[in-house]
Image (cartoon, rainbow, N blue to C red; front, top):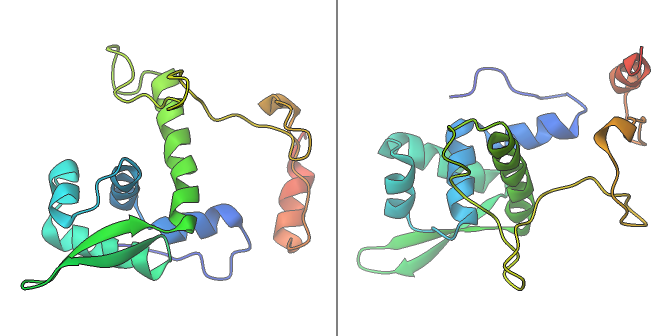
Length: 163
């Protein structure tokens, strides 16, 4: 499934990619975020093989993105629930959908899925905001800066920005 790991890489993005695993896991997370939770629902939605689905669910559970809960005995059946960490990763899924919709990746018929505020009924989108003030920031105004966990390679990457 996975060719090369991200072991030893000091990068939050690489860490999230490792925790997710691959494209099938992204679709599984999408479905869990939409409220599907049972194995057969996930299988129907993704059309993935049993072996692949089982492997990806195990990987997501091992990485703390989902937890498995028994909902039936005799035979035992489980549902899969997003953890708090998994719920945060749904932001990545929504960002992918937002970019796909903007550039009509799936065609000209319009977005296949909309995200709305359940209170107002209006569409929502992800945006960059200042952490303290909450004010919107344009992407072109964002600059990387080495953080406290940066290693030499991260600091080198930051020096290459704007050159």
